[in-house]
Image (cartoon, rainbow over all chains, first blue to last red; front, side, top):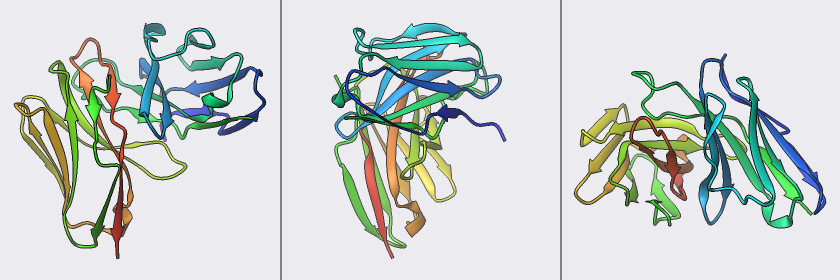
Length: 117
Length: 113
């Protein structure tokens, strides 16, 4: 049963602390996305990677957010220092490489709910 | 700059009737348009998509219509069922090679039994 796995599912932390969220994309998917769900912006794209290289991270606050893919099976999103306004649900998604199988469908993980006090 | 807009935050429909969810976009470089469904505490799941070269795609109770001249798409659900109650996100993908997928703000659909 191929699926995107995200950890942690829930995280409560205090302002100023470092937060790291992890994502394991579906095996064979070479493009990985990080989205944040907020009431006002819906699903907001933070960054995405292809073949582990960042393609676009313009949606991320650069001073505190960073995203990496140390290897093809792991993507990380780090917030340092965290602030209350970062409280949201963060989703990771992956998709097939370019080709007939890729019609834009993304496969999402269950999300990491972050609460910064 | 919201390139994909869903102007109705919520919609309430009686069971058995038609649900129509709307979406507008601004970027002419999108090649695929998609609808996702999201239940609470779960990730979004793919529902249906349409290529920019088509104007209609149907899958069971779900039909997506694309009006390129108006930069508008809609999702029709007929007949609506209580299990369809969820948040629906419209999404658009930039042309292949770039593959950036942009989502709208979502519409919460409630189907009343």
